[in-house]
Image 1: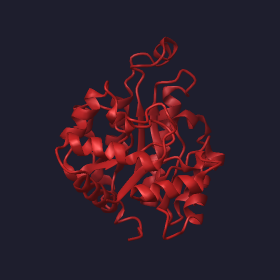
Image 2 (image 1 turned 120 degrees about the vertical axis):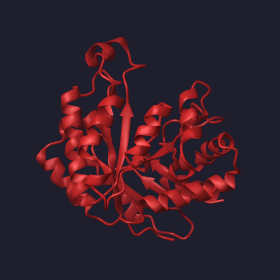
Image 3 (image 1 turned 90 degrees about the vertical axis):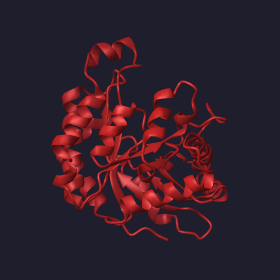
Image 4 (image 1 turned 90 degrees about the horizontal axis):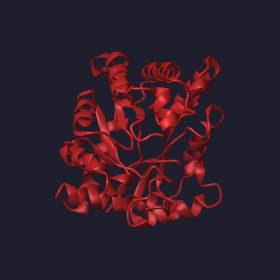
Length: 288
């Protein structure tokens, strides 16, 4: 059984990345998309460096993204956009992201700054013909201070509205929309994301008891638009919840998603691998 981890922060494994990759390969993970956000634009390149330096028949194939997370939206300067465009031109960089909106933390930039950063990166992705990796987190479960700062604004509604204007499928017919990373919305959010051309990627929180709406969306999504991820080192799935996550543990999320959809883990692995390759087939040369 071969799996693809569609979202992992490999640059956060400073001390044991070789061992992490070895364990991933042993568990059946054959491809990893390393997310290039770091702690801001000055670290966007780190995932690409890992992707370019990791080549072995006994390790997963690693590809990279590059982007500026909404928490760092104030750093989206013309210079940062130029830097991002340079990274995006590298064939090993197959996506822009993660980008989006985050109304969860009180110290995040204000809504206008986040939205401007998101639109700027959507425009860059369109120019580079690269799919986008979307981050969306509302203030629904945030602290009172964050709720006061962001008010009644809904990150999902704002995100989908901006996508409809700036990333409509008909506007970019040659570029697949991309991935709703760590999908945590409702069935309605899933439907609207799918209508906009996105794939839905499910992470370890799919396995958490309180994640009823995520499981409903995961059961609703069509078979040809689902992916699995770790978001490592975050969101370790049950039975490893609370521990450091890593790509090898994507097997647990895949098993949970397979059980939810009443298919075998092997079928789920085949489906999600094919979906990842379909998504990136027109914009990237993936290894066999």
